[in-house]
Each structure stands twice: as C-alpha cells, then as structure tokens.
Length: 181
Image (tube, rainbow, N blue to C red; front, side, top):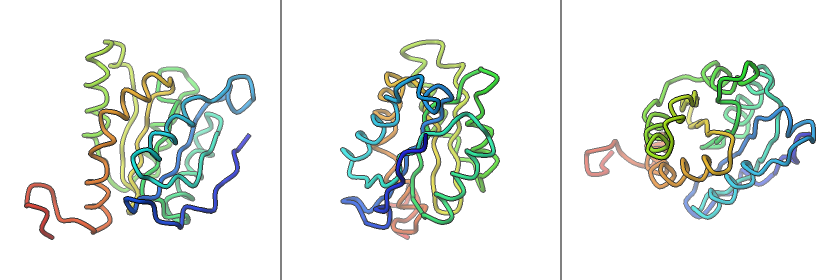
C-alpha cells in the first residue's frame, strides 16, 4: 500500500522547506500493522513549519526504497526526507543500505547525535544502524521505527536541521562564520 503522493511539495512552507516521509515496514505495507511512526514524523515536521507533500509506506525492499528516494530527491526536489523503520538487525532491514546507495555525500553527525541521545535513554540505541546523507540538495535521515524512538530522535535534531538545509540550498553561509556567505 503506497499512500497517495501529495502534489503540494512544490508549495513553499512557512520556513521554505519541503519534506517527505517514508515508512519502511513489511507488516505495515501488508496491512498487518498500523503505521504510527510515519504520521508522527509528518505531524512533527508540520509543527516545525515544514510542508510535507509525500507520506509513503513501502516494504523493506532495497531497490524499491532506492527508486523512491531518487524520485523524491531528483524529480520532486524535496529538501528533507525522513525515513522511519528498517534500521535494525533484522535480515529484511535495509533502509541504511538503500540510503547509502543513493547518497552523494555522507552527513554522519546527525545519525551519530541521534544514537548518542537515544543511548542516554537506552543502551540498546547502539544497535541502531540509521544513517544521514546528502543527495544533490536533499538531506535524507533514517529514523528508528518505533513512535517513541521517532519522537525522541526528532526532538533532538529537528531544531538544527533547518540551518543545515539553508546551507545545503545556498540560502545561508557556512557554519561558524556568522552566517555570511
């Protein structure tokens, strides 16, 4: 089941950022489990001023995930893609591999910060394999699959992503130089 793709990603949001959400779950895709993480990510992004035009539910199939990421980055030109799910040790979990396969550059600090913050809550956070990368002018961040972990991770990094997106898009200067270009 792929949720309806929105046509609103070309519309600017309050902070100028367009985002997309992808939930990766075999059970969710098969209708055996309700997706609670994807809608939570969408709600949190919208509360932060992002315009979320695409909310997609896919199975844990690497080729399909790669195609969707490429489409959102290269065709839809969204600035931020947040994925949820598929980052654990299960043999079917392939979100990090799909994300790395489409990446131009690595942005490891975001994933490292999320793991560190989660580790303060549970040492099992060290088992998370999520990555954060850049493709073109799009930032892609893998979140865990549980709603609790999604909320904890996004609360920690979401306030800082806008600055990175501004630099990536050329709307702001580099970090540490007073915002000058």
